Amino acid sequence: PVESAEVLRRARDAFKAGRTAEHGFRLAQLDALVRLVVEHECDFVDALGRDLHKVILFHLSLVPVTTALDESVVVSEPLGVVLIIGSWSSPVQQCLVPLVGAIAAGKTDSSSTDAFLFIYLLIVTSSFTASLLQECFHVLHKVTSYLPELVEQKFDHVFFTGSREEGTKVSQAAAQTLTPVTLVLRGKNPCYVDQQCEINAAARRIAWARFHNAGQSMVAPDYVLCHVGVKERLQQALRCALMQFYGSDPRESRSFGRIVTTENFNRVRDLLWRSGKVVMGGQVNEAERYIAPTIVVDVVDTDPIMQQEVSGPVLPIVTVQSVDEAIGFINKRDKPLCVYVYSSNSKVVSRVMKETSSGSFCSNDSVLQTLQVLLPFGGVGSSGIGCYHGRYSFDTFSHKKACLLRGLRVECMTYLRYPPYEDRNLSLATITFFFFFFFFLKHLIHRFTHNIMTVFHCLHWTAEDMLICPISCVVLPPKIGQGNISLQRRRK
Image (cartoon, rainbow, N blue to C red; front, side, top):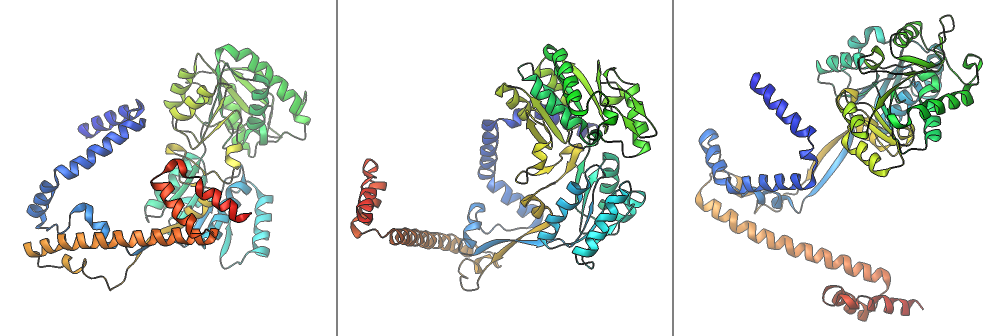
């Protein structure tokens, strides 16, 4: 155990130092691995013979040639019955969007959410009953209390969105039956504000993302890493943005929400009172589960509000001296679901994107990257496993089955793999390989020529054009335009 811990530490240190991220380093290591196989091939053969009495009939690099004329296809087949567990914070996005991928992949589905949203559950249940085939698609209510037992029922795939604590329980329960899982887990999403930044625009976008839905969003910025040079300006810009959004009394604003449960209200209020210094907001009303949009400054890493996800209308601001300090602060914590950076300097944006690891990334805005259907959305490390959205949802709920479609006619390369293995057979294998290689090369040349002729035919080129173009392309590159001139002449 001590030795393995030391090996793990050294490997992590090398990764954090960025050695494996260099393109040249990776190429050099791949080349070294190829040389290892080539130079020690006889040693591998000898070791396999001694340990397993295994005979290597073909050269390692020649094996793929035996199937070169066969058809290789990948078939996407549905996994089966999938369980989709959505979060109360964004029930439509986190229940119905994965359901689209499950239906497209051909699965039957059981969807469920937390028990907090009674009206939403009623609408979903009635909509499922009216719109979807009830034998294939079902809705489960109040699953939080028996979540591990539900997952242990042996679904073919489990898709879960929620907290890390519940995600851990889902993963452990699914492991008992080797059920694959997709986990999208909430956490603390950092947002770095650089000194080279249009502060007013950044403040409006941060305030919108943080305080929308009363801060109850798994993709909102959870805390701000603010460069010391723009700290005061950012605080003032955030005040102005909140005043513009919700007025002087956010409690009376129809645009500002409430905390979903009393339990979450008490948790957020305790975090607020035990961390940093409140410079705006801070008012609470337990009867309405109302917490005013609040900005907290002078926050340090050890404050309670920095130890867990806020999931409420509170924005902590941590001061940093440089982008290096911000990157170091992010990297010493668990990998977040989202990382945001606001800067007019493209080099700063590039550094934060490349030198931090997260499920998603967005520069000079927040949340919008999670709404792009062409982009995958999911976590990494402590923020989840797998992804979804668009094509990626289809892939998540499908199994990629590798299929090789062979015939029974070409047996000259096949029968040599059968025992008994003698020197004569090995010699015949080498001869047959070279024969097969030249036959395959001839086949490729024929197919290439046929494709070229098809293109010429579709373009209605003359015999003169056909002669000029190949010679121009292969032998005389400066005269490559002759074919185009002739083609234009014919079109006229």
